Image (cartoon, rainbow, N blue to C red; front, side, top):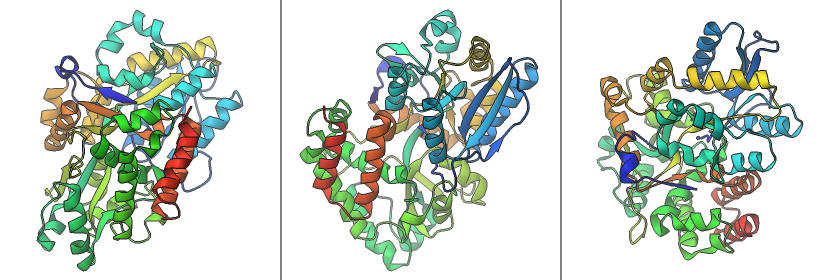
Length: 448
């Protein structure tokens, strides 16, 4: 799924974006599928349940939003439970299948939302948005595409825009005496230079498979343009065997074989922020990751961010590629749906939560305070006041200048196809399958 950003939406659109999704503080689970944190109070017929993701600082904002709502609505409480990303995906799938879903379903729109709609598991919110135009009109118009199925809106866009960004450690680049890559060829030329100095060219939390996915996503786009994945998304036969796709997968494995990634990347998790730590401690020179990681690096990286050692850029073009290097991908927003089998009372609590608490002025300030661009129109002046104004302006520019803002593959595809995708990406990175085997497996998973 792609979001085409036209001139009209660009007038007031600050940025267009999840794990998770999604992916928002996307991260993979490394434990059981049980909750990591929850609140125990607020039960009863006037309460609604809400599951969301861990990883700070995003989790703290979500929790604060619930607490503010509960304080203002003592008879209409929200009970929340926080899960790590992969654990959440497993848990929510099981819960919905068993008819035990929370009232508010956290997600990333796209293929998963389509599957919920097909199963009659989420409510059509179009009439509610029509009756409350102020709720819809204050949000970025582009945020609604992944929330829309067959012309109807089934989710409330929430949180912040999250493009995928190529981060780099300026201090490491200066030490090695090199400059940031302007093309894919530059990336390949930099790899042996960093390795010669004992520095990993790229950090990667490969145990969290979706972090690996970002690489072929950009290579597909830069080599063949957005239409290459669009064909796969639409279920066209043999779409993954497009010559541009095979070239992208080949280049991907060229980088792996050249030791482009930190040793042992397949055992590193994104949930622990260990991949970020490799960048800000100078053990890795670069990292391809979501804009949501900026907050974690700012919080945990000492003076790495505040001192200006963190650099960032859009993914560079591939020599001879057809893709527009101004395009981007990631999460146009995160999405909250209402479980169709919830009680009428629970649904009303959820809708009041959407209209009064989600992206309230207090929450917007918190998102900006963590280096995020919330999907609310008219916040430019607040962004400029932030200590992270330069980064927020960068996110704004990347997102608004992109002619196409593509949704992350595992969000755009159906859950079954997405799982096949992630499994095969892991195998591709482990070099246990080649580009054509990857394409064959994916053609079988998505082709009509």
